[in-house]
Image (cartoon, rainbow, N blue to C red; front, side, top):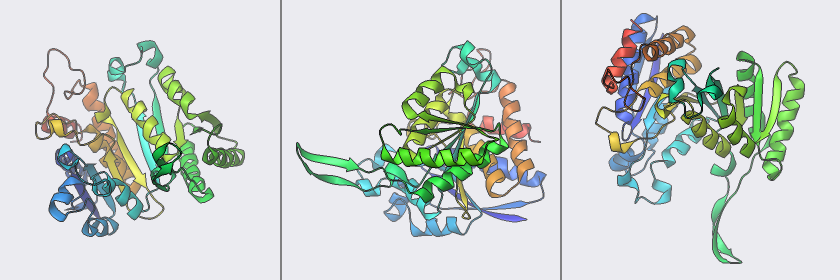
Length: 358
């Protein structure tokens, strides 16, 4: 089998970490009975420099005609003067919408060798945690009506949170499907004591809970969920929540793992190619220095194999290789390092992972 993979390397450390993931994927395709055809397209700041806009039509078309999309990161200070509608970050919202990607999967896992890198007290995380945040991706306040107007106290700005039954229903279905494949526990996070959109969100979650009695279902206000994540993260398995709440909670959860450089993500739709990317940013301050941690992007490639290409065994091989690499004590500079060994650079960490694949 031959699969077409669109590469959106982007800005900052994006090209470095995507190149690392591609290097791993090329080893994987030799190990399994399929081949990968990679094509690069511009996005973000580099697309502004080349085409004048952050998301050119050639990029959208190329992604739509691919089997999966692997993204690095976008943005950097050189594009801060761009008008709001032409900022590099707008490309992320645009490509998700263009591909109809409404489900965002963000795992947050504490590897046992990294327990002392977790900012929580050791006794809080001795049992570890393995959380999957299922975030709605194309609705809510990020896509609602917005603008400025003259108000009672002068000029004011507004953004609107709006969710339809259809949007909530499809994210709930995805979340319950995930929960059934894991530990059959799901926590829905909302703000139903204040927001009307959350009242509808909770109503539909309760309907799903009634239809799935084999799954333990909990509703939690977002402020309490944020507190519970740092009080006892092991209580969570699958968390399903809205676009903005998911954005915030997934970044909070990422810090509990010891490094944001470890966490992948998958953005999925009903039929279109999925988009796979690390959750961290473009880190322009370390671009080109070899300090970038490639693990999050490598694990994003594993999610690409699992969710887009349905190559489960190949995905497991990558994840196992990352586990072994961490167990062997190899670290990049964003992770604490054994005093007797220097941190690995981007290429060295990539090679260490590949050694555990071969």
